[in-house]
Length: 346
Image (cartoon, rainbow, N blue to C red):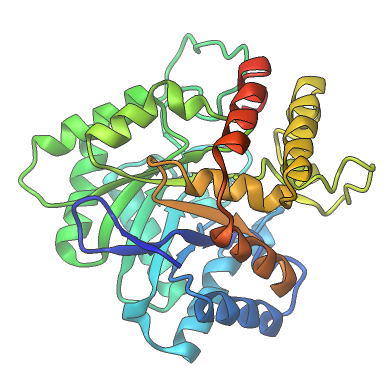
C-alpha cells in the first residue's frame, strides 16, 4: 500500500482510505472492529469518519461511528500509526439534532464539534478535521438545475479559517479540510489562509469517479497548483460501478437506496454510462469495481481514494485494486465513454 504526504505537511495517508460511514450500522461492534483490524493489517493507515455517521443518518445513532473507532483505537494502541479524519456537519434541515442545530462554521460551534469528536474518538488530537459541507447557500452537491437562492446564509470564511488555525495551534487538530466544496470556496479558503502566519495544511474531499469527473473542470487545477491533498469520495457512485444493481437486486439497506441522490443515480444516462464502463472491464478481464478504483489511483490529482465496505470480503476485493494496472487501451476506452456521456452523476 503506497503512502502519500498531505500537501507540505508530515502527515501521511495510505492510497486507500477506509470510509467509516457504515460503521455501527446494523453490525456488531466486534465485526466492525475486526474489519478495522483487517484494514490496518493490510496497509490502510487512513480512516475517515464524521460526527453524523453512521448512515442511514438518525439521531439515535449520532456519533456511533466515531465512538466505535475510539473503542478500537483504545484497544489497538499505536495511535501515532493511524491518520484519523473526521468531519463537522454544516447547517441542514435533515440533521437538526447535531449540536442542537448549532452548525454554522463559527468559533463556538467548531470548537464544540472538535471537543465532541475528541471525546467520542478517545484521542487527544484529530489528524484531519474537515467541514462536511459549506455553511453558505451554494451548490455543494452538484445538483443539476441549481438555482442561486435570493437570500444567502450568514457565513464568514475568514472567521472559520481563524478558528481552524487556532485549533491547529492548540494541538487538538493537526490539519483541516473542506468537503463537497466549489472552486470558489476552495480558492477563498486558500486566500484567507495565505493571510495568516501559520503552517496549517488544507485538504479537499469531493466526489470523483468514472461517472463524475466534474473535478477536472476547475478544482483539479487548484489542487495541483496549490499543492493540496485530495481525497476522492464516492469512487463507485453508491455501488453503481460494481455492476451489482443491474439485475434489480438493490436492497433497501444498500447505499444506493439510502443515498439522498438516489433518483439521480438511477437516471437513464448514468445507467447507460455505467453499463459501458462495466463492459470495458469485462472486455479486458478486469473486475469492474477494481477497474473503477484503479482508474482513480492512476490520477495524479488523487492523494487517497475513500472506499466504503461492510465486511472483510468487500475489503479484500477493494484492496486488490492496488495491484491492477490499466493499459493505454483500457484508458482510451474509458475516455471514449466520458466523451460520449460526460459526467452523468452529480
